[in-house]
Length: 249
Image (cartoon, rainbow, N blue to C red; front, side, top):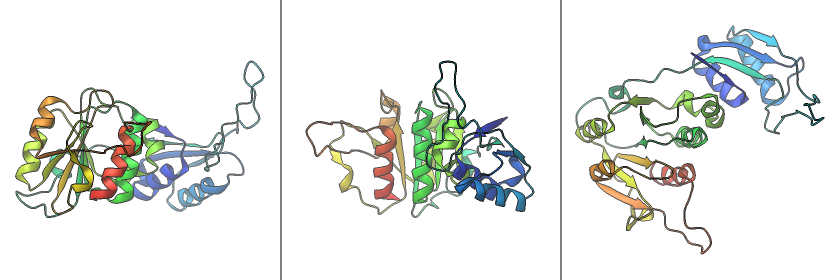
């Protein structure tokens, strides 16, 4: 299976990390900004580059312009066809031997369903050097084109596994030296009090329901991000993830 990726930074990451899986790059005749970098790297790596008809200035059925250039290098009509990155076995994402983990941060996504949230979490994980991500197989967002685009290369650089039984993953994580830190808006412990003194597996729950009951029971500690203002009482899960990752990574 392959995905169509339109964020040039995500395409650059794919070419750098696995050029053989980049099937082709399609760009307008005169690519600019980041897409020009994509073309240069693709040619050096032997990736097929084809001309794409730019949709800039094109009009829809009611005369509306269809120019979708977003000011971040996403030129209209530019895209790449890339094979999906294969997930690793969970044994390869977690520390390899019992009690081996001595530091670092891992993530577990407990049924996060919005691909934009998943992509943003991968982006933060890649930026801060998260060691790996465990994802649930059921009731979770698939790694779609949107995830690749939003992750800005995070999907290419952070090891991840998709597992059918998150509880089993928690058991192995503990055996290998990780401590489980859950997140809940109802938790009494403030995230600011969490020390970066051990290897944490940070667990992020579903957008609406949060962590499942069994997930919370498996945690060594559960923390919250407390609001400092009066008007907003909660955060999007990907925003909360970025804050917590920056604290613990």
